[in-house]
Image (cartoon, rainbow, N blue to C red; front, side):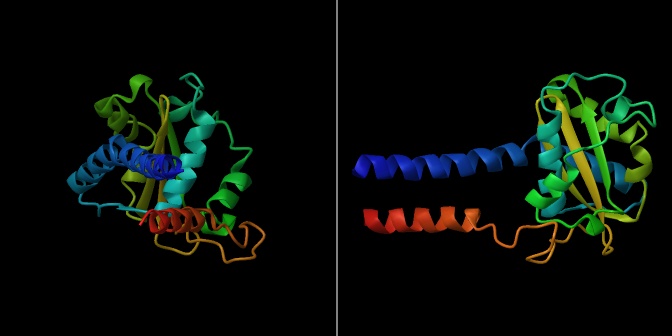
Amino acid sequence: MDSKISLLCFLVLASSLLHCARSDGSDSRLLKGINSYRASLKVPALSENNNAACLAEQLAKQFKGQPCTNTTGANTVPGTEQQFPDYPKYLDHCHLNASVTEDGQVMPACVPGLVPDVVLTNYTKSQYNQYLNDTKFSGVGIANEGDWVVVVLSTSTGSGGYSPAPPGSNWAPSVHPFNQLILLLVAIVCLLMM
């Protein structure tokens, strides 16, 4: 019995560490590069926005496995970018209301192997640089899946701040206690092991 509990604790901890390690690697390097680019233009740095990061993660999962073409990501011919049919579902998952994302900007890019310098260039030397140059954007969420990286820019305004929807709204479930349940479970297991 003790080995099963220890294994459960290990799996929960390992899962948490793997998620943190993935989100702190290439995503933080890209954010640092974007902020260096903005600094060279005398534009304030972007700060991390967890809600925008949640949306970026949902969108990156949608792109995973799709090939890079001239109708996807930063190489897109303007006007041919595919829409996000499951966007309401992604907002729901991230507890967001559509009205708080109106002024934000979603920027997917596909780079085989996610080579850091090429990924940064896909944002600073493409149609996306107009948004990176814009002082109205103050926050960012970044996620990657496969060869895809998605950058979501947020503003400091109510219509672009990606603030969570109030409980019970039409766009967000009123209760999502999964994270708290995991923490409670780990605490109980650890107390039982003492």
